[in-house]
Length: 257
Image 1 (spheres, rainbow, N blue to C red):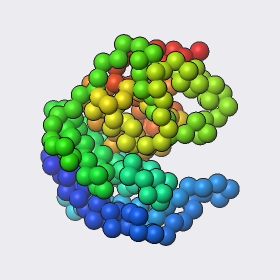
Image 2 (cartoon, helix red, strand yellow):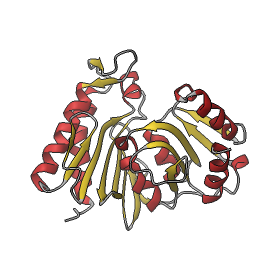
Image 3 (cartoon, rainbow, N blue to C red):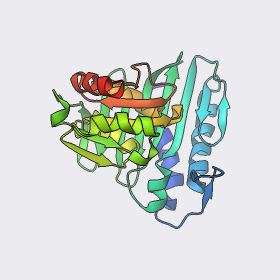
């Protein structure tokens, strides 16, 4: 059974109870990656544990894919995809552009999505009826904006340093053509595309939980999100999201040139 979208609010509130008190509070940071830096905090683990507990209580027949505590029941019709703190580097740096991502897949396709930024009190929830925003400036349904060419577009990527040399060259062809580009923001950037405040996000090497909660937010707002080869994004990989299909096609052609 597919849950009511209101359940996403319950999950987001439970996660915020764990993350918000630890933000800008000197929380301890561990490194998950030998030979590199992949930070995780007590907030990541506590938030995911809280989310998983509620899902298991209400929907014990659903599967779960999570960043911190692994996967269970991935062969089930419904699978939750959880990133308790997307943008942990921002979180530990005191930047309020991280977010809690929760998505629900039905037979491999995203059907619900949530991005919650509890510090700024901004929340995006998406389902078949649309993408809805609530924040300090009110509540409303949001739509991506039209943008007929890259020359008029605002582009985000987390960091150009994350691209491999060949990817950096291909990404650079897009960046050189846009009106403005900005770095950082992780999941927040995708939400800006969905809400019509930015036009395109290009990233590489994402895990399913990095994008799973954002897919429905983008698509229900009229945006398009795919892999660099034009495929479905539910499994992650190299991702491009755009508010307008025209610039998505233009950028995709450059990424595959």
